Image 1: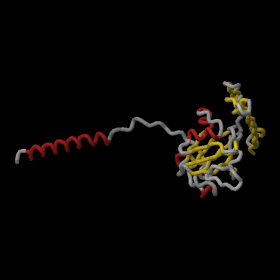
Image 2: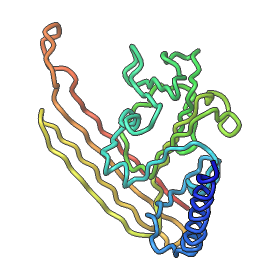
Image 3: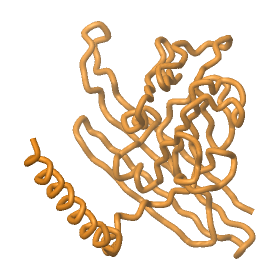
Image 4: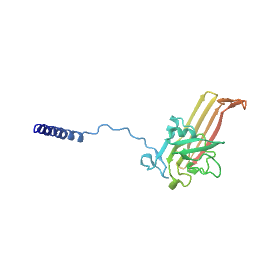
Length: 240
């Protein structure tokens, strides 16, 4: 019974010595490798401009560059890249949005129905979701806030809020255009021009879009192609 005890003590001393020798090397190891830097996205989720990393709210934000890279062209496309967000057409009203966030929302779009997800464009609140399904034109960013957000955004935001912010003109002269052609005679075109009228005092911007496409399926009842697209939009803004 006396022999295992010295062996056990020697094992403990060896382990302690190894730990003592290894710990200073770990503590003094220089941090030479740096992780990838996070992109700073400025949001207004709390009614003031601040970086997304410092915002104590669950927010999913998309910049104009991200929208273009992921081909998010309208309100419905946004839901494909936001967890727990569902945006669909309301039954019977083709231009009304049915928005669910975290499983909470409203299925109908009637004058007496209040939604659970707030929807606003440039801080203008949509009390009803009629007309909320539209194509994006000259958008700066999109913010999706998970709720409840009643403290900052009032009623109809128990599940969260969807904010769309348009691009504002600046003192820099800007011009861009893009086009797309595809099947079923698809034709998409976007253009924008912006610049100063009076330096550091007045700037304006003009943008427009066209989306056209023939029907993708044939209705035997109607005797014609359906699901076609014919969208035209124009926006003008001024910053004084």
